[in-house]
Image (tube, rainbow, N blue to C red; front, side, top):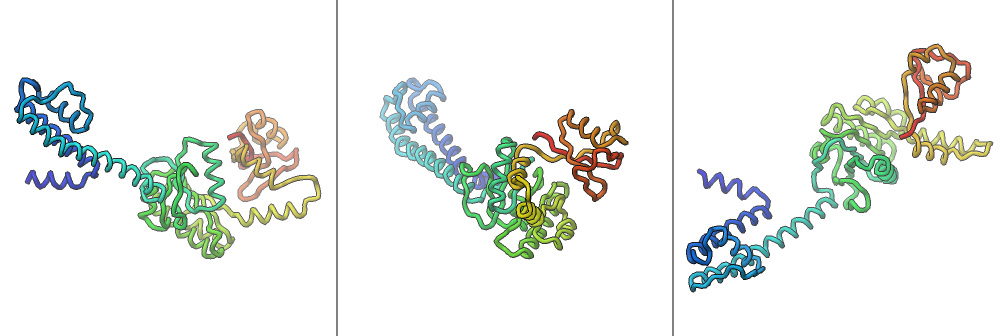
Length: 332
C-alpha cells in the first residue's frame, strides 16, 4: 500500500525533481557503501556522501580517495553511473527551462499572479495601450489573450501571453480571471462590425460568468449593440467609431489654427479624466468660483454632468447644485 502511494506521488512530480531525488538516493547509497567498505578513510557517513557527490560530478578534489580494492570497485561503479545521472539531470533541467520559455512565448502557460490587467485582442490599439500602461504603471502585470497571435516574447512586449479563444472558460482560467483587476476587450477590426460586436458581447458574458465583480471595458463598433453589451455585463463601453467620427468632423470643419487629434493624444498621455461629486462647500456657487477652488486642489474643471446631460465650458455665472458631477482633468 505504501509502495503504491509512493509510486503515485513519484510519477506525478516533474522529471527534473524526479532526477534530483534519484541522484540524492544514488549518491547517499554509494556514500554509505564507501563508509562501510573503508571506515578508516571515510570515518563518517557524510564523508562518504561528500566523496560520492564530488566523484559523480567529476570535480575530483582528491581530499578523500578509496585505497582498498573493494573501495575502488565501488568508485568505478559510481563513475559509470553517477556521472551519467548528473549529466542527464543538468541536460533535463536545461531542456525544461528552454521548453518553459517556449511555452511562455507560445501562450501555453497559465498566469499565477493577482490584481492584473487582462487585454483581449491583439492589434495596434492594444500594442499602444501596453506601452502606455508599462510607462505609467510599470509594476502592473498584463495578461494578453488572443487566438490569432501565435508567438510573442516578453522582451518585445511586457505581457504574459495566452493563446486561445477568450469566450472559452478554460482560456480565461489560464489568465486567472478570478483574480484580475480589470478586463479590456478590444474590437476585432478584421471582421465586419456585427461579427466583431457579437464576439465582444460573447466574450463579456464569458468573463462576467467567471468573475462577477471585475470591471469590463468593452469596445463596441455599432450603436445598436451597446445595450446588449451592457446587458452582458460590460462596465464601460468604448464607442470608438463615434469618437473617430467626431474627431474627423473637428478636423474637416476646423477653421481655427488647432490640431484636435494631437491635442487629445497629449491630454490623454499627460492627464487623466476624473468625475467628482460637487463638494458641499461649493454647492450653490457660480461655475467660475468652482473652477477657481478646484484648480487650487489640482483639478482643471472642464464642465459638469447632471444625470445624462453634459455641460462643457458652461457660462461663468452658472450656479452649480448638489446633483452636479464635475468633469475635470488631473495628473496621473
